[in-house]
Image 1 (cartoon, one colour):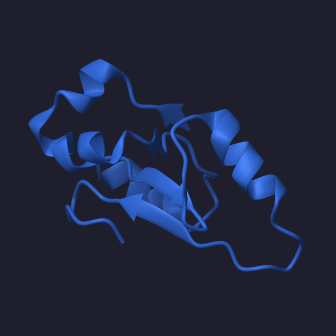
Image 2 (tube, helix red, strand yellow):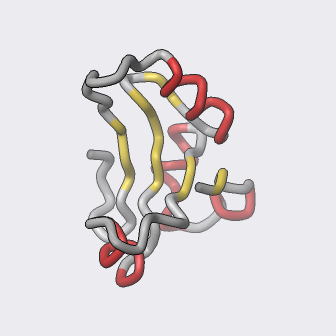
Image 3 (cartoon, one colour):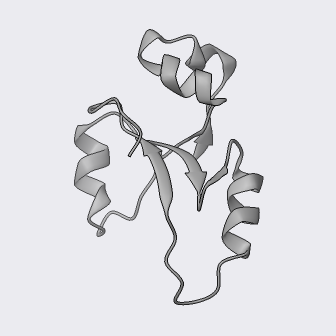
Length: 87
């Protein structure tokens, strides 16, 4: 994952993400996982939040995930450039 830069946020396609304060682009996934084909053939998704808490840096993502216990469900707010609407 990579935090979006101010330059990234100037992109017209990322105006909704800029208004939300930024996020983390998913730039690497396990090659044998289900997300691999999606990442290779589409622009990267952008993680905006974890369990309702905004995340803009790797450190914020780690902190948000540290509060989750094994077996708990994690809800991610994700912005997809191929379907521009947070989901």
